[in-house]
Length: 131
Image (cartoon, rainbow, N blue to C red; front, side, top):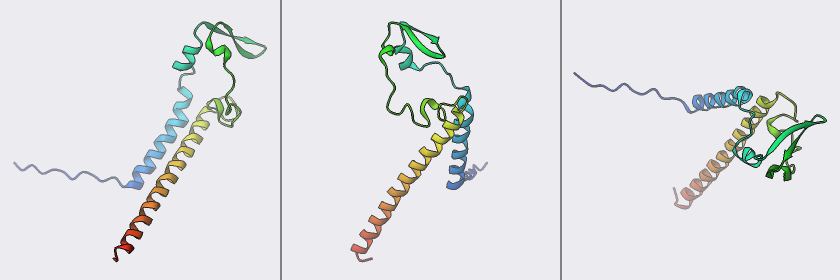
């Protein structure tokens, strides 16, 4: 019996990147709506000893906890604060998609600059070597 290994199918870089982008956008856009709205570990720890009550349409903490002394952060009025677009309800999927697009754009830009710098260095080195 001969043992011939089947050639592994090659995935083109462009196909991989497009597939990766589509999956990232689907995760950000769809799974954002089913993510837990419960506080994460840090929020949960800072709220121990307090209860959240609604007073005049806004949530307030009663009791004694670290979170009572918290203030809004510098980016709290930014367009994507609180995982929503301008604070609008049910826009967390859109905010997730925007976040993925911005993150991928920054990563692609950084990798492009790195590759460009390497090409420039390689060209300079080959000219200096007299090739």
